[in-house]
Image 1 (tube, rainbow, N blue to C red):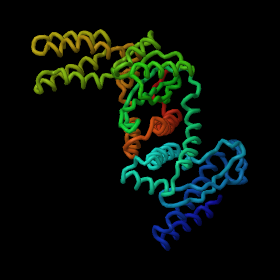
Image 2: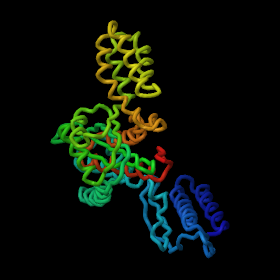
Image 3: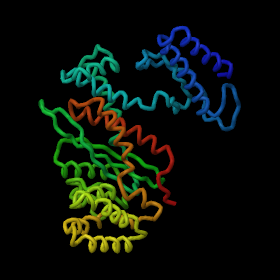
Image 4: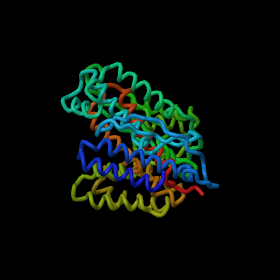
Length: 385
């Protein structure tokens, strides 16, 4: 598409908004998205229309009509195609799964009669008012098939494994219960991060963790050299049973927070926090042990419970000194998962309460698929060279 055509389309979109105000928003957005997709296809192909280029990857192959129900109305889009069938516009791909999963979660609540006035309002805005249980079931089946394939995809070499858990509210037999969401992140030999798997269950903590780790191994996860996690109930036993020989690093951030709970006086907390930080920031394992001994000697008389707790627990957070120094800062905590948890919380807060485990699993998986795709194609997290 020539520069003149692009300019004409942009002008037409602006004119629609000028003439019709917000009523012309859908048509204007339709024009701009169609234009953006054509430009993106040209960048993917590596050559413009009728242009000869040694860097050309493929050839344009027409358009495919796609109707998108957006918050500003229906958009009749012309999706550019390529002969190699490998191109798909990022404007349609990004956020599509999680948006569909969120709509389904809300729709299920609406259909099952457990929605609040707030949920009904959101349902009307996102999904339309005419929602039936058969429509929800069909949409859920299509999305679940796609997400199940991702959850069960084969794994391979994983250098470092980061494990985390969070809880969401689920309605079960007329009561509200906490449902555990287990998440595994891997740092691959390439240095990129990848979401390896997710599991949702109301089962006992240890049983759930054990089944989750077994599934990762059955899918081909191998070569794990290091595990980082918080001190979740049941995780220790499951980890020792499934990955007994792999060094474990307890999250230093959460451990430092736990230290405050064992500090007898509020006035002591600042000093205790500094002393704990000195242990974690030691230059190597030997210096860390020296700092830990000094910590014990400092508080054994004034705060004996704190001193004993530190002696028993802080060594669990010093395994990171086994790693190359350039890896230590990023692998001593689970803080790298904060963004992931914030995004999950932002979406689950809209749904408020999930009607079943499947609905929660669907939404969390959809969010993590998008996050993992972004990580695997983005900047390397660590360098293993």
